[in-house]
Length: 152
Image (spheres, rainbow, N blue to C red):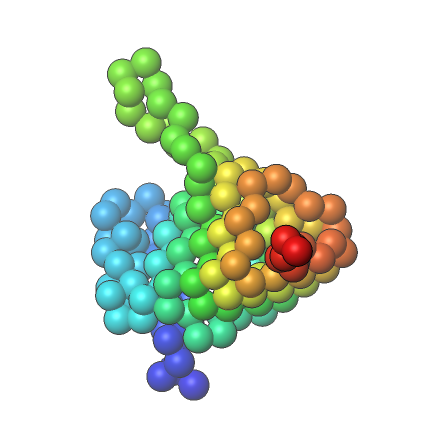
């Protein structure tokens, strides 16, 4: 089971997250970057991840620093839980404010979806593949691509 890339990346992130909470400098980021190099899965040590989290395949998954992921969440390859922008202070330095999504319990996000900004994906929702999402969705939603309309 430890040969699966997602298990490797999640295990490293959970250790790094605990070290970060203890105030250990630099080492948590080194640990998650080691996992990123080995697996292609980039999970920031600051991300908060619940129980029963899984990533299928995993290559290209990016989970940002202030992301919050609930229990029983499933992600597929290429998913980004990212920020739209940084809030800067008067000196132009990024402020440490929440800027990544909140994913509630029992959510499934399919391949190559980009969920951006401090938005909430409601409990039990399904986000289809190749979706670009920058607004919150209520619980039990399905966000899917629409079919192309052909001109006749």
